[in-house]
Length: 198
Image (cartoon, rainbow, N blue to C red; front, side, top):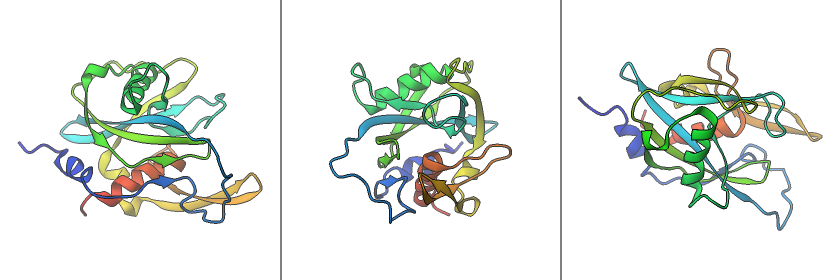
């Protein structure tokens, strides 16, 4: 049987540039000498009934950064992390209970700069087998699956905007049912979509 993740693995080998929350907002003036902190997010791919799905989280509504937003499990690289891949795996273990040994790292996508001054490295990982999802209390409100084909189909994306800090800000969205996937998460998925064959 053909591995359903073969196209995804091939996509990781294709060239592509870094992305940012400012891609659709070229007029934004970024402060010179700003310091960006390294972070890693895991893009966990799990095969459900022979169909690849992405595991996503809904962040708790009281959090300081990105409250209520749809996100990959992940966060900033701590001193104890060997690299951003280790940070992504650690955060996935902490946020959704995904054992590190249950993930085969497939590779990484180019970095993504966020408005909160992080340089995020998306780490794609195959979840080998089903696991008991345990949302981190106080940080993760919900954990859910989305078919990979949905969030890597360019036709599913749209560009929307809202006012942010006195300016009109444009961003990608890729909604799925009741979940409004936008911002950095949607931009990273859009970058992945652009690498996959149609």
